[in-house]
Structure formats: C-alpha cells, structure tokens
Image 1 (cartoon, helix red, strand yellow):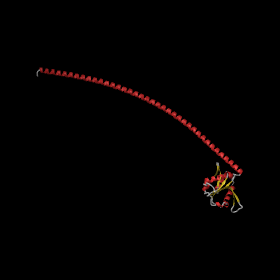
Image 2 (cartoon, rainbow, N blue to C red):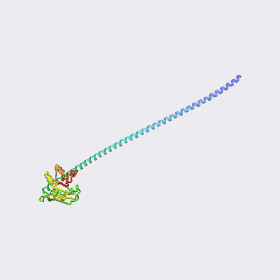
Image 3 (cartoon, rainbow, N blue to C red):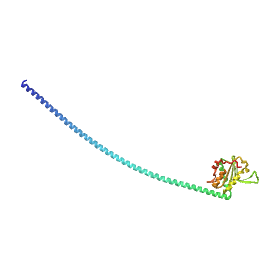
Image 4 (tube, helix red, strand yellow):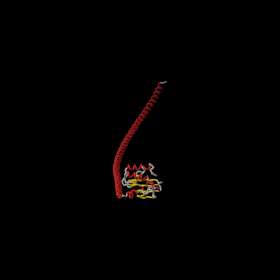
Length: 282
C-alpha cells in the first residue's frame, strides 16, 4: 500500500473519530440537560410534596386543634350537664326525703289519732257498759236490760237459730216430781233443735256456779218436753274471772260476759272442742 493511501485512510479515520467525538459530546450534553431537568423536576416535586406535607400537617394540626376544642367543649358541656343533673337529682332526693318525712309524720299523726280515738272509744264503751251494768245491778234488771236482748244474737251467731219457738225471762216452774218445789229461771229459750237455759248473776261466786250445775242435773224435772233437744246452759255476768271461766268450761257450761260493746260467749271454742252439747245431765 502506498504512503498516499495510508494518509487517506488516516484522514478518514480522523474524520470518523471527530464525528464520533462530536456526537458523543452532543449526547453527553443532552444527557446532562436531561439530568438537570430531572433534578429540577425532582426538586420541584419534592418542593411540592414538602408543601403538600406541610399543608397536610397544618390541616391535621388545625383539625386536631378543632377536635381538641370540640372535645374540650363537649367535656365541659357534659360536666355542666352532669353538674346540673346531680343538682337536680340532689334536689329531687331532698324533695322526696322531705315529702317522705312529711308523709311519715302525717301517717304517724293519723295512726296516733286513730289509736287515741280507738282507745277513747273503747274507754267510753267500757265506761258506758260499766255505768249501764251498775245501773242495772242497782235496779235489779240486768237480765231484762242486758242478758235477755243478747240471747237471740248468741243463738243466731253460734248456733244458727233464726227464731225461737219459746222465749221468756224470769220463768217460774214447778217440779214435775215434787209439786211443792218451784224454781225461777232467768232466761229460757227453745228452738226446734236447742234448749237454752240461762243463769245470770250481778256478782260471780263459785257457789253460784255450783248451784247452777246442781240445777242442771234436775232440769228435766221442770222441762220434760225438752229432753230430746240439745241443752245449751249459759252462765252470765258482766265480768267472769278467768278461773271461773275455766271451771264453767270444764262442766260444758258457756260463759257469757261483756265484750266490747255487747255480751258474748267467751269460751265457745273451748267447749266446742269438747263437743260441748249437753243432751242429758241426769
């Protein structure tokens, strides 16, 4: 190869190399420009992100501040509501306690008044009964005034007797065995089923009770027509001591004395437990 040819090829290579170098410089410049632009875009993006984050933080802080304020206000309102409710409840409790206290006082007053009225009534009834009994004893009319009017009620209440076939007070009867013997009975009452005989005393003695027991043993000498009826013997007085009452019960004799504002059988249940109907005492 000639020297001229070599020089031509070197020139061509230099041209190519120069072109390559220029192209490389252009590419490098473009890459640098792209990198610069990317850095600018990245910086701008970061700036925008920082701004956005800052705004979000500010909004979050403001939201938290508002929420804290709202919660504080709600707590204050709740506390105030609770305070008002507590006050209202306290006042209601005080009013209720005061009302209850007044009601309790009123109820106590009413009960005390009722008890006093009842006591006064009982005392008045006892006093009236005592005066009535004393007056009847003085006049000798205890049978007519006190005992006899209660026999019908006793018969109705305890023995279901609505009416008597015979009823009389201070009955004088002659013995069917000894005509010379005449006995007086305070109250005699006869129904279809029962034969009531009553002995009344203004004062009570054991001897009076024993006399009545003896009289009952011979009762059919005076009333033979009532032999088949159930005998109901009743011993009456304004007051019958407890030992006398027990003695009467032992002999199946009903004790009748003052109870509240009337006369009543005071040993009915005890006698009924003993099957207290007396059919025949002979």
